[in-house]
Image 1 (cartoon, rainbow, N blue to C red):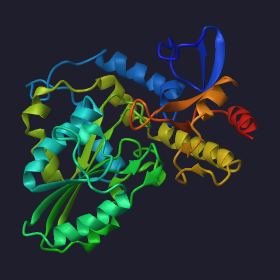
Image 2: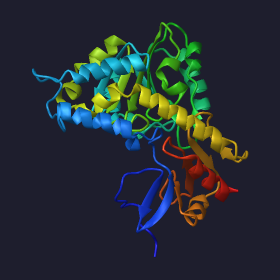
Image 3: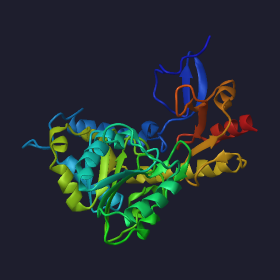
Image 4: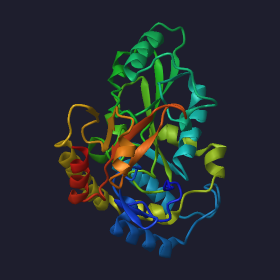
Length: 347
């Protein structure tokens, strides 16, 4: 009888118990282990006691909780942006940003952008790789009659691990005006010592940089974030979508504000786990230094590891009838003995 892993009735952690059997878990996106971090949970409970379970009033209400402005100020400071906006989800943050800023100029999508970034249906991209796209983008913009462009991209590919380099923006002519929107949902809190993509984007007089992100992955908060120049963030805050939507839980943002040291400690633990695991890998694995996802071109890995009570991320891609892509994902909640057990099975 096949075990159903789609109806797990417990929080995700380094181990999950299904039908009375314990499995090591190496999947998901809780890279810093925040959902199981007791110090963070304690902060969340403090937030609930201070602000209640939820707040359904929109950001346009004449009576507001001050925690939302505080959280936005903290996010801007922490991730080195001029200003920030927080919504109830990463999807809402991305849609709000893309639909508002796409009117600035011609929209150009990088390959494999997340659906949250799509204006309508999946955009057509002729290029297969980010490298091909950025070269074509330089040539297209520099030779175009139009002067205003909106570039939309992920900050990285987390399925086939690759962190993107946006220095190509320096090759675009200065008479071309660019807004670049980058989805950093998987990188924020992890890449660039936890600072994410925003501070790594080139600072150019003809380029405005905007980062959108889900806070529900590494940061462990059910909310969405937009980082950018003050005038763009203030423009987004005037939209009907922002003023009409309910905000995220105030308690979760209270925890976020007070958890900087918790995040730093968890990040260091994750890097230790990465170094531990990297030492056992051979050249057949694809990964990015410092990012905890590992891909191998072996479609039966998930099945093989399951026999040893180890669960990994394994699903068909890009179509339902495709071979599964198998990724091992490390988290701060993994202990050295968890990684040792995984390594021993992989050998």
